[in-house]
Image (cartoon, rainbow, N blue to C red; front, side, top):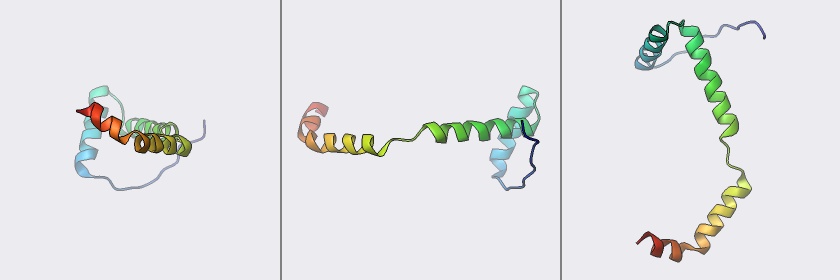
Length: 74
């Protein structure tokens, strides 16, 4: 694992307070909670992408069956 790298940023004070509460409640330091949150975000963004061809097929299907979908919704 690479050495840790320092960085500075700004964050909403309420979000920071809640993050500190999590760290305290779990007996962890703030750094480990922030690092976990960043890792979770990176993983989510990497795996939570809809492929353009899937989106295009979905949109075409909705357009094609618009009337049927409206009737089924009623």
